[in-house]
Image (cartoon, rainbow, N blue to C red; front, top):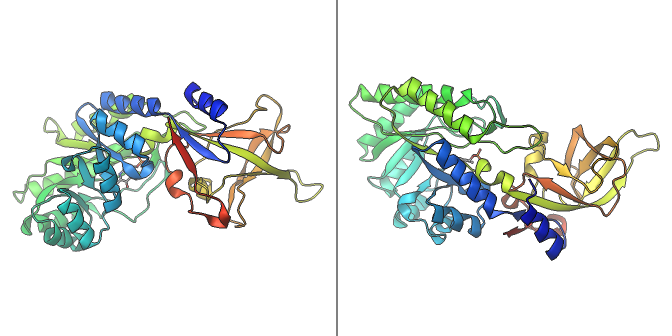
Length: 377
Ligand SMILES: *Cc1c(COP(=O)(O)O)cnc(C)c1O
């Protein structure tokens, strides 16, 4: 996953301190793989996964659309060359004045999951298209999205009916099956719910036209994951099963699956020690931790592949931790991480699959550690 371009960059530039290096060639390949796997779906890249301007510019030039969660993300997508008709405001929790600012920027596509939010959109973005997010159980996802977003399908019917009554364009339904979703059947369950909303509203004379199938497409960490092609086939089958020959317009919003495997973090071993002479695990402290970009190790949810210069030597389980003075800054302890016994203070390690959800989760300067630097090559 560390491509030759990334290895060459690190070898010649020798950047000081921990940093993320992203290979745009991999992002381009991922974009084309999604295009090929789901040729009838529009791709809305989830900007939050990695908003580096180089990535946004590349995707804009390839024809991608963008899923954004704030006015700042909308402006980043516009700056990268996306036109407003290629941007959705996909956050279901928005201030009314931010909806108004998005509308002034030309944005006409908004996510909602409550009647209260529909009322805001109707006031601040009259006539806009809205889609209603339905809850999913998140089962099968390594980073489930809980109950924070979405409503039950029966309520989505009320929300979209209200949207229509307030002069909005009741456009469709969205869901997110949970991030790092490795169960292909998750989309089938969610599409059944989406279809139920379509049918209920059709009986009232309201014809929805779009299903936003969200993100969730995985990155390969330690375990193999199905290919984009496999996802495409499973999703197409589920769409046919539930919608027959009247398949609506569809959108996908890959974040992790677009950039996760394009990035590698270079880090350095700061300390290796034990807590007692008879301790059977060593503690390995890196110069990056939960506050430096590895927030997704929370609850040890995402387990990154780590490459060391001693790979091939005998390994032993280690507790892996970051450099800050917060005791929460431990990466893997419940399930210790096997690392070479010969690993030494000062060794450089590569943390792979870190192109998504790292730079933007890094603290501004907790304990004086600077935010994660990133190089996009
Ligand atoms: C975060 C997010 C995504 C991207 O999810 P991934 O699992 O990274 O693909 C897509 N859509 C919405 C609405 C999101 O909030």
